[in-house]
Amino acid sequence: MKLLRKGFTLAEVLITLGIIGIVAAMTLPTIVQKYKERQRITQLKKAYSTLSQAFNMVKLEYGDPRYWGFTNSVIGKDEEGNNIIDSSSQNLVKTLFSQYIKQAKGKHKHSFRKYISLDGRNYETNGNAELKSENILYLADGTMVAFGWANEDCNNQAVSCGDIQVFLPEKTAQLGVSTFYFYLTPEGIKPWGDREQTVRPFKEYCDRKNSKGIVANSQGRSCTAWVLYNDNMDYLHCDDLS
Image 1 (cartoon, one colour):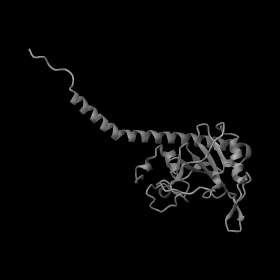
Image 2 (cartoon, helix red, strand yellow; image 1 turned 90 degrees about the vertical axis):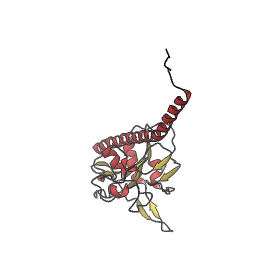
Image 3 (cartoon, one colour; image 1 turned 90 degrees about the horizontal axis):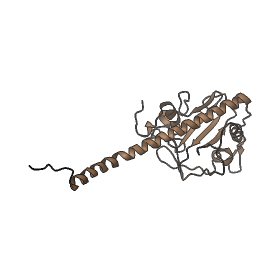
Image 4 (cartoon, helix red, strand yellow; image 1 turned 120 degrees about the horizontal axis):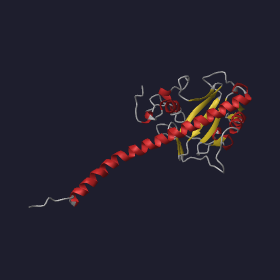
């Protein structure tokens, strides 16, 4: 009686392993990308919750932000015609919020390898008052919150009281990927690109192809609302998000 052969030949094993390797090589980048996006979404939501709670506490103690004492950011021109910036309002917002935000301990740096738009263009940030260390808070998970321009006129919802930037702890600060914008209003902190904001609509300022020709340091700012409302970053992979 002839015995049946059990097991696999070396060639069969190598072929199987080769197929598994090819499938893994094709799917692993997508899995890693999805994991990274989920991590970013979680960090952004956590930062938004922290800022919103701090805003509510500040408003409860100090009242409506229209009466916090903001001054105009641009207070004049120098001899060369450049704007003279007064950052006291930025410092005020940072000081008020810092009372109600748990911050990371120790010394921190706020330098990035590069700053890029949603479509990958570099933009210059040297000398940008929004990134001065005195206007920055570091959250416990390493996320950086930078308080930008604060406006004296808070009555105009489109203008808003000021900007707040959230930088996730990554090497590159990319708008709509690791850098997200919020704006301060009398009603609370709102994400750029939300349904009430008409000045910088999502469909123009979160368009990965940049069909409207948005400048590099703005293209991607309005992706914040999409992430918070839809719990995904599909705008990075799809052109029709209707």
